[in-house]
Length: 260
Length: 298
Image 1 (cartoon, rainbow over the protein chains, first blue to last red):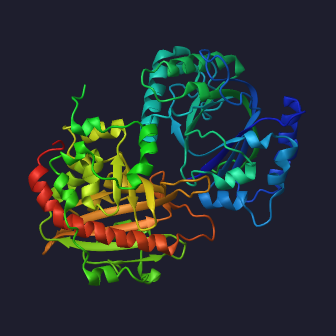
Image 2: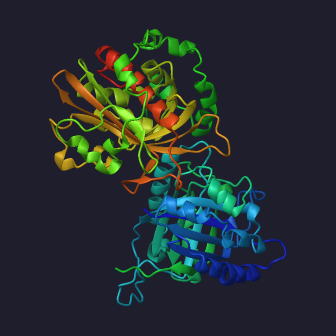
Image 3: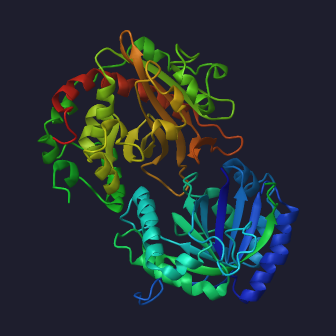
């Protein structure tokens, strides 16, 4: 099963967000194309906006800025390690310092699990309906597990909360085009290779990142409705003060069109 | 609402349980409440040593060419024996392979099903199994709810449940999360899942990491298979471990860095531990089942 590395980063001191995203796409992305190694796909998610923590918090409890999340997908764990730890350090691994504040990166090594959605194509203009589950607004929701909750229960409650949220939020139910759970893989819990590649220091651990797609930024309110409903689920499973979500624009760096 | 019993009072939340495992790893004396449990006396029993000839078969690695990988799991449903029924080695791809075979004259499949559901409910139940190396065991609240659900047959109670085990497999105390699966989810061919090829099964996949985990600690995956079938001398128990594999989307996948092998000491250590713990198990299971096998609670 493909395995994926998701790295959320923020810009280095002295760069604007636009400068950071330009560098990430046109310099770093080009290096990855030239040094593809065993990357199956590489997608950048450029942050438009986002929120960290919840309104009840008096102040932020974590780094409260992210400018992009990159997703590197590999066919296997071995392929991932061969790419992240090549015999000779890759140019990509040395390029990060020119645009990112690498010490504050957050990485999640994950396996994808698709959750069916009620309306994978818009009703107002479905076209041929051949292409489903796409949208110009991609939301990444990092949900910190509550310290008291066992992982297996966290995943169960999260799924229950998702169903609850869709029931509660009619706008999201109509507008959510695709939903993927990125479930943290315990292969190398400490993410040593990724930590070295991304040069992180004491990063927070997220057991799950939910990705959702909506048609355009105009539907951000649908996610917001969903998010509030998710939080209202009565069982405790998340530390919302250390959770965050990002509205992003997806930029494909490497992705071959599937044959079928 | 569940009534409060000894089986539910022991529930800790994840944070408190995890913090407790270092103390658990020291195998402290029984608490006053534990000492009062009706099965506590099993803790002080003399543990039978393994058959020396059997144990000696774990001294040296077997021929990897005779071992099987997890993709050949269903060979275990073939009649007769496989090339390696007792032994361990590193496979050519670096994975660790363990096979063990025991025959228990007085054990039945019903006892096996009961044990694997009954024992995770309390630390002490796990400790009495093999006191020298078993530290403790915790379930999540949802896992406990499933185990205690009387509508679920014993054989199915563990399906999807995680046993959070603290034990020493001869390489130091580890916290091991064992995700139990149904035979179907483990990859067995259910069209062949019947007597006389199989009587029952307990298995899944696990992640093991040192109790004294540091930033550099490796969390090691493994697949675990205990499959049982009838034998003229009793119930035959065949164990297989594939260390270095994880379950990915229902299929085993090697999860070792390129060029890395599971250390031989870890493979041999688990193999020896397995022989010892199941020597004890086969001897005491019929006795404890007679006393407590009618229920999950006591």
